[in-house]
Length: 304
Image: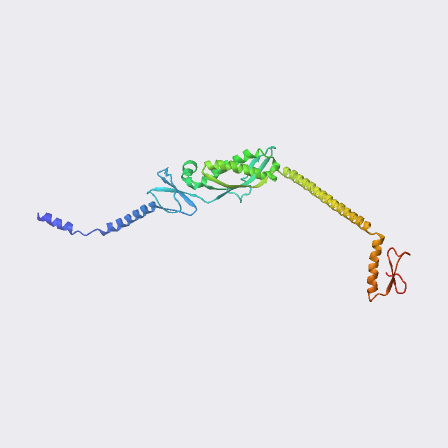
């Protein structure tokens, strides 16, 4: 009995092991921090988050800011700003190294290279559908979905256009048809097309030379036609002016009777007579006083 009591007293008085406590407390704090971080997810501005729990996508999206989620949820983020995707022959323009232009065959059987830029953005309301149906990462949307889709539509539409159409106003019609078809198909992929731009049409050199000659000939023809129209208008103006002068001359001739001329001469005589500086004499040019008067100086010479 005494031994048991002594043992009991010994065990009670045994000092506490602070070393274990110093290890356990930090571990608990770390676990709490990990748990807390797994409950909070930050979605940056211009992004949207798709929660995935043990491989199953949750049918809701996480907006920008701090979001509280179920522990162990994985959040896949997609950009919601307008994206620019370029396929170009210039290496510095596109995201693919080397020549990434699209070669299409025209209605007249010629190959044309097209440099193209697409502006688009994802349908953020269906971001979780993109993860489930299209792509589990935004990085694969352009090379796997958008690139082959666009190139196929361009080739299908180009066969209805001639090579020269890519240098005329029909180029806008081509872009319009491509945009319409691409917009409809992208909508099924939960992607929204903003606009399409054909930056450049690359033709064989022989075709470019032929088109250049044709354009120069057309320009010269239009210039000659313009000059012809100007010449015709100038001739019409001169004809109208001549007709006007002829009419005016007829009117003047019809009014210049001998009596009218004599009347105007008498008015001039009166002004000369009343002038204080008059130093010449006015004489009629005909015996009967009709006709244009002759003006003489005081010495009898003709006034010039």
